[in-house]
Image (cartoon, rainbow, N blue to C red; front, top):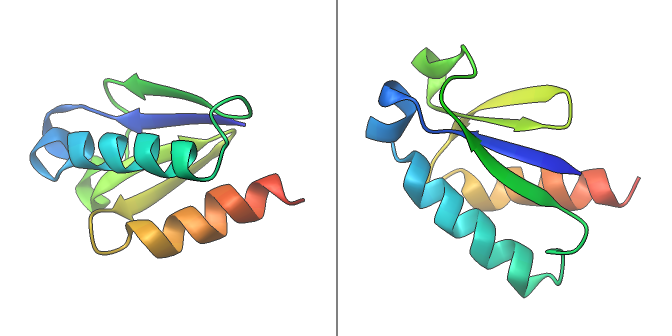
Length: 82
């Protein structure tokens, strides 16, 4: 699985570096660092809707500290179990 977190100016202001840190911590906690490639991008084009994260070919918007756990559960853990 490839995960790319937007760090463009809008996403940066909305907390993209917090999302990256939470992503790293949760990937380690779930022993997924060898199954997931985590990177950053300068713009995914959907930054008006909150922090954007691209998981493989899907862009999911609205990531933040409050939504992280449910989105991680659904999109990352759920995506890996398919």
